[in-house]
Image 1 (cartoon, rainbow, N blue to C red):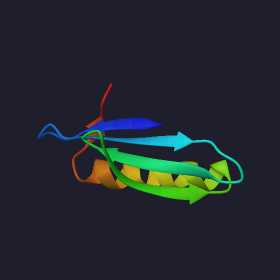
Image 2 (image 1 turned 90 degrees about the vertical axis):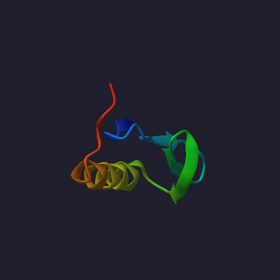
Image 3 (image 1 turned 45 degrees about the vertical axis):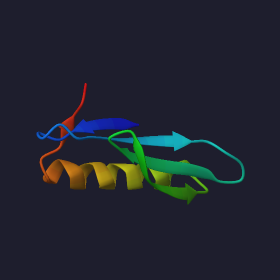
Length: 65
């Protein structure tokens, strides 16, 4: 969904794993699993991923392109 980089070199990313009946939104920090959240619909998962991304950007993280 997105990848971010911190000025000190750390990296974060969010990934959505589709499933039935629930899908999982997972977050990684430096390629290590940080946390996962089960969701039943896409829209709340997308909103949650955006919320986490905005919080990281406020702490100095930028898009890793």
